[in-house]
Image (cartoon, rainbow, N blue to C red):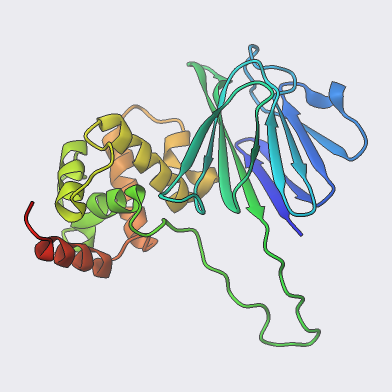
Length: 264
């Protein structure tokens, strides 16, 4: 039976079980009906619809339907092949959510003192059937795997390049690797670098790494900052290394693969 935890900055966490549903938006309570919970998004911009989303938890699926007049970006971080799956949600569009953490970004959905900013909602889906714990069993349930990157995905290689100074013991490295340096390292290791020659794609990958390393609540990209993104990148690199999203053994393996690759 699935269970879902919905979190967001400034909003209470909502736990949903099979048969329960959630309505959310600027003022969604007008559409409330039996079996549904309604949550008003904090600091919601006035141009955001009163009802933007409907999250339905069925017996074995979790479905998100976008009802807002604007757009949102949905990312499934863990079980999507090749890394994060991203899709732009438009009105009346529905999507089955991946097992694991999903992130819904309402574009320019939050009003701040400095203008409009994106609103991030984290939707953590658990689809597996958890075996019941035997009463009195002192061993408890088996420990599950923590958040991580899909091995040999684009974001995994970017994390390797980003954290390389920390993985090789250069903790005093004066700055985190640049987008160009990350791209060149991935090409060297893998031979193919997806679309990382475009700096924006490197930035997108680092944002995914940051969301996994810090979690949605403490993600520095979502916090107010003074524009010094290099400081954020430095923090993400160090945190990714500390969380062992990639390891020195991973770095040694990709270096060995690169040395043994036949010349093209």
